Image 1 (tube, rainbow, N blue to C red):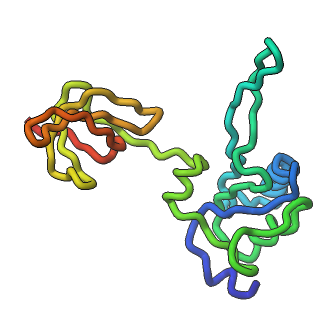
Image 2: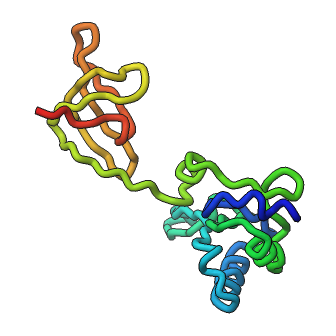
Image 3: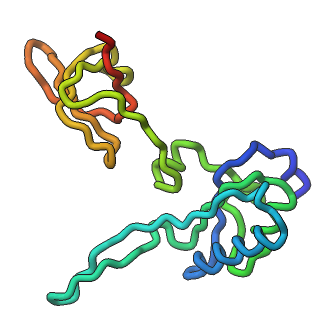
Length: 180
């Protein structure tokens, strides 16, 4: 692990592989280690992405929290020798995800797609506003906002194509309001 200090990229999300069912124990142990050893400047966040599902048993429904990626714990940290050893030596951790013994950080896109960290998008337009499309095959087209679904990161825009009004769905950051 001598090259671990050379790969310091600042705070990035890494994935630690754990034994099945040990995810919460690993998270709790790591939180204690951070507090006891004063590693808050190296390890910033620990996440176990979960989802709520409704299980039916006959007529009885109950909400259950399931881990989206079992056997994995996501850790936002500055990778160096000290932080690597702190995580790697926790009971239940089998190693980091990456080729060989080299932990590989997640890309920003992977982090947002997996729901590990949420990206805040400021929506400065409303239903009925005229917007310009910034990205994709319809870039530079303009249209009217039909609906906005912030929780789904989606905006529906009515665009005039070939003389027809067509609703097209975009991500919230793919459009901007046209200054009037």
